[in-house]
Length: 98
Image (cartoon, rainbow, N blue to C red; front, side, top):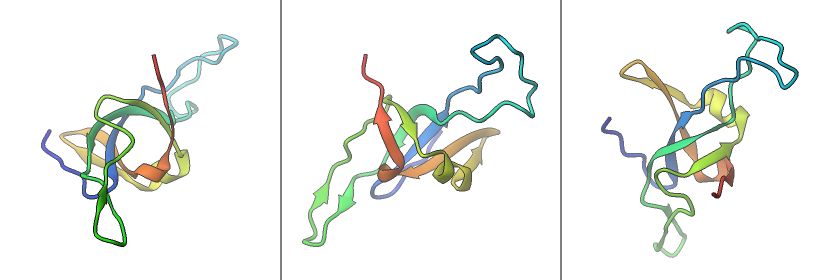
């Protein structure tokens, strides 16, 4: 995949949807809710500040993140049959740390 997001944008692969609930109930494909977590595949150079400096992003390629699910619904793209999300850094709510 060759995609380079601009400025403070990131490209995320959404985590697989859950097919069962915590109680063990099976959810058919149409009822499963899309995940709001994923892995960062690419990041931009950073936000350009008003003085012209570039502030690097706080996230990096490979980070597992939780993102704003409403922003993700409007920013989905398809590349080689795979659905990816192009989000702003501000759409990331948290980073999983091991």
